[in-house]
Length: 506
RNA sequence: CGGGGCGUGGCGCAGCCUGGUAGCGCACCUGCUUUGGGAGCAGGGGGCCGUCAGUUCAAAUCUGACCGCCCCGACCA
Image (cartoon, rainbow, N blue to C red; front, side, top):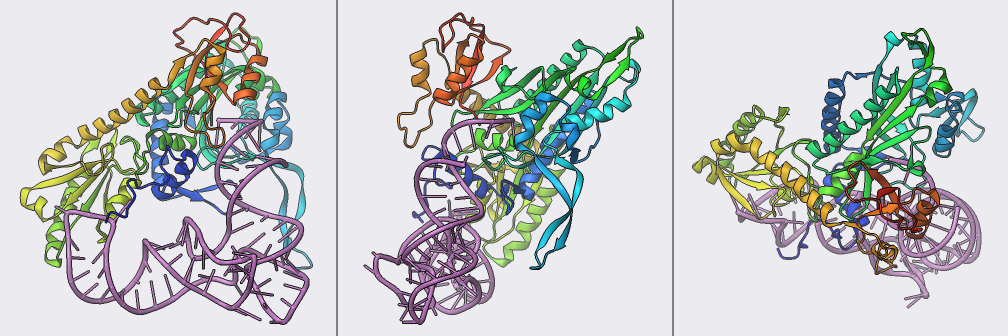
């Protein structure tokens, strides 16, 4: 009593945001660090969230005609070398398998024996191996388009890792399509970006900006990279999904040719698009508060937890019966496109139980004791409201309204995130203001500062690079819906070509 | 790879300066009492103190090397 801190997570977001991120994940039971460098173990609570995200995305992909397939984890080194920019971009972060057998040495230690004839790269992405397959599958314009998606894991040996945001291995989906025309491929690139934006906004309650990457930020081997960018609560940007227009680059590299209706031999036009478990990091940093994470109802690992309370053994049976029947009743209700998921937690561990679920971010907590039985009611706590703000509802009313309550939370989370982004997005025309905006007052231990700056850019890569070097600020995207005219370049003062979103990024 | 911090039971830490073989809080287990809320009392289990080597009668404590982790930066979903 009284010795507990005011918030469940310490430090708070304002005290130390990176440390808060570590702590809030630990408390959430989503995942933990593994003994393998840079890799994470996704625990059941985290994996259920990922499954819901996958399910939502998968359904949207399939609606557009995409079919799932699976390609090998290993890519022959020679495949990686086919597209020059692609190798260049990924070479440094490739994990490579060079041996295939372990043997005991004289000291009894296991050592790799049997070197491979050709090293295998653990896929950092699958463009090259899929391109190789497409080159065999596609002969005629009648074979097009090919619309593929793969759910899997990839490995990128990053220098610095952060759980969910940048792990050496991560789970994702990568879509790969091939088309007969530039227009159709471009249309697909935009279509998939729209799906990511819908996923982020409608399911994850994360508002995103859609736009194009600059050449410096483009996917290696792409002609054009489109992205969605979200603002985290430390006002840094998180790239939450990308869709690439690959032109004919990979088609030329892997000889993906077809005969057109006009009887000409042509290269196909390809696209690729991906979103990863990084989205979970986005959910954590968009919605989490100083009491833990907050899961958006549409993708929450579970939506309601029932917490039976009984003082005496005599009450136990009645309370559990009421709880179980309510659980059954709730599971029969649908929220959006799936049945409501219910957890029952009968552990008799006092108030700690409620806090555990708050930290895990479950949208609704229902306490059930003899009082509820007597009044045929439920005692409801919402994760988007302060933990002490709980209300009693009639049982029938709750069951009838639960879908609406979940939707209300979903909408609240989105609205809250959107207003945070709006409050921290500014149009800046003056270079000095721009540098001030992105410079923390406390250089030793930077406070949360900056945000999204809408500023003009002349289009010169040098200006972009200078800003990155001076401030670690990058152009997150050239937004599709830029309202202001371009103005003068924030770096060199020459006439601007684009209105760009500048921010510090993950 | 550069800068900073740190490696002691599951988590957070003290002990290290002034060597003598391990302690606290939380968590965990048992019992009793409590109970609309992150309980109280009593008892209990769990650590050869990152690794290796050295100094010493004796090392968590001193010396050296190495390994790992976290934060900041470069690389990046």
